[in-house]
Image 1: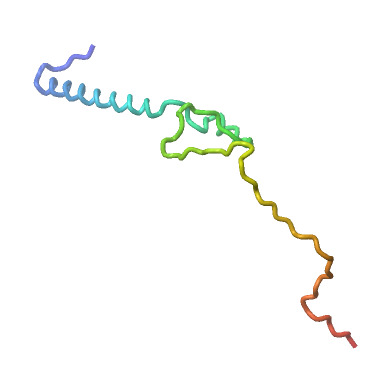
Image 2: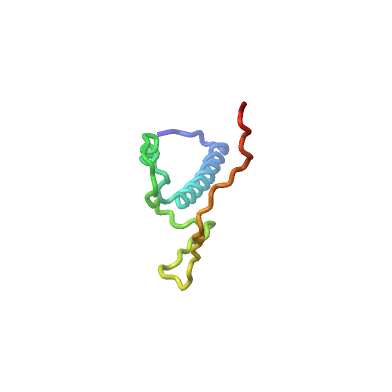
Length: 107
């Protein structure tokens, strides 16, 4: 067991150490609560990507929705509106126009 000198400096150091340890423990607890879940992408996903795999959707990391990201709403099927369909009207076939006059015959 470690022995310390019995003087006011040692007592002050022990008190300061206890106070700093309490603050550090609080910071670690707050960090742990903020970092719940798993990292995205995971190391396995990174390794697969490095080997040429293409990831189309990540596995949920358990952190929930981001508070700053807007909610994405999707329209339900069979909405009460019509979309427009535009197509060229059929017409008579026309010959292509030349953009420059024909070349003069060579002599």
